Image 1 (cartoon, rainbow, N blue to C red):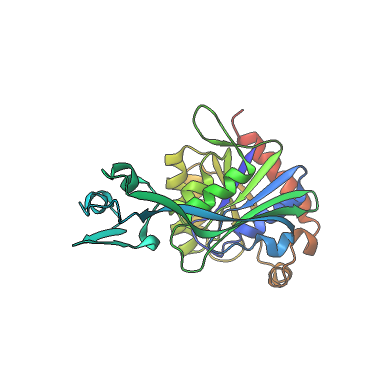
Image 2 (cartoon, rainbow, N blue to C red):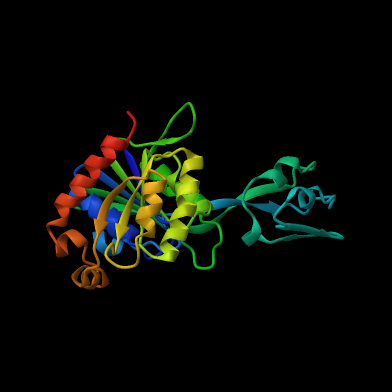
Length: 289
């Protein structure tokens, strides 16, 4: 089973929930797909055994063959190539690696070379298999690195190219929000946990996340963090929309202090291990066979 843990906004406890769930179960692999700001390793403390660069293909022009026809610039919707008189300007940071320029070049004057966008690391944290990606500072393209993290740990279904779990349980720590990296991270999941908080901002971004998952047709439920602060509007929204609330975590100073020290919630409060095991049981009940 693949369980994604997502949130409409940052700071709702998404990583706390993902790590707590991983540490409470057996036969787990953990994927931190929040490649712009990965932090699950702070709590899981894995021993990294494999590191590799992740590249995207960018064009390299052979100016001996090039006739400066400008077809490469015409096809590039991201303006990563410009042809000025007898000069080809390449802006590799804008390139999305689609390969259209090399495919359509009539002189075969364009080849593709790899440009590193980040690093992928794999390791072990006790019995947990761990994989995460770290996007280069200032890099805009997170999706190829998210895809690389998933490919490194998941199988691809031969009929639809959807990711499937090799065996056991896969937990994916998803980036916050509803942008393209989020879509890539949750795609192919069997279930998605949405972490939220009972505040106006929490409700607003929960609604956006719910709309996204409904379009993706992924079953989901809600975990309310800091559940005893704020108001009841998140509860009312979930009730009206028939969204199951699977777990509540109260505001707890001890949990906050432990988090600041990189200590998982089930180490600070061992009783929560049973809560996370119950959470997984409820996910199983809600997941179609």
